[in-house]
Amino acid sequence: MASEFEAPKKLINKLPDLQKWQKSEAYSDYVNFVMILNSAVKGKKISDPYPASKTVEAFIKILDTLESWVEEIPPIDQPQRFGNKAFRQWHDKLKENSELLLASLLTDQQKPATIELAAYFNGGFGDYTRLDYGTGHEASFVGLLCCLMKMRVFQEEDATALALKVFNRYIEVCRKIQTTYRLEPAGSHGVWGLDDYQFIPFVWGSSQLIGHPDLMPDSFVKQEVVEAWKHDYMFMAAVAFINTVKTGPFAEHSNSLYGISGVAEWTKVNSGLIKMYKAEVLGKFPVIQHFLFGKILSL
Image (cartoon, rainbow, N blue to C red; front, side, top):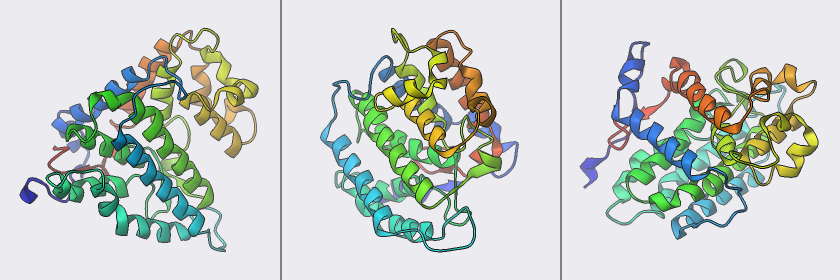
């Protein structure tokens, strides 16, 4: 069984490799996974009742553990504003424990896959060397969830909980890491996304808002609306986070996001964001050159 898996590698090394990626099995698996969860959360609040398996609950405990390490490893005093070097201690702890943590979700037969799964997990929280975080790290974590669903560790009926519980908890942990260790936005200040760090919360978050009787796309520019709804909708929580880390007029510091407020309905916002995600994240060499390929997500 062990030979079925291998340490995933970077295989997108030059610009023409992007086409190989866009035609690959990994690409279609990844995009399908994003779309399955996008459909699963349509019109649903985070607090709504939906099935959450024991595996989902177990994964949330793993994310809680990662958050507790942030408390244990405080930032160090250092002159530079961005990129606190204490993040490296946190990341070392992640790498030391990731295979063991993930193995707790797997059957004995599935355990050899930890060599692949841990690589996506380790890549999901920021870069050890550059002390930054961006949509490529987010994609690594989504890749992990995609692998786990492909292996049937998660079932299709877990889709809603994977987005609204697991992924949402992951984002909360990432925000804590970003603010505690002052991680630099990857790329030229989040150039490949809507905000400096994330993209997927806006995709799945806009699907959650489809058909909402009161919240329209122009409502997220009002801070009181965002504060009232941020615990129920990922989109609102993402905007609330931007409001805490940025100052000045929203239209200036988050121009492409502000543009969405002019769209008439959430269905259009959602389909537009999926197109933008494929073009600006999955279709950009600086992001995808870091993505890893093994036997589960194969090029």
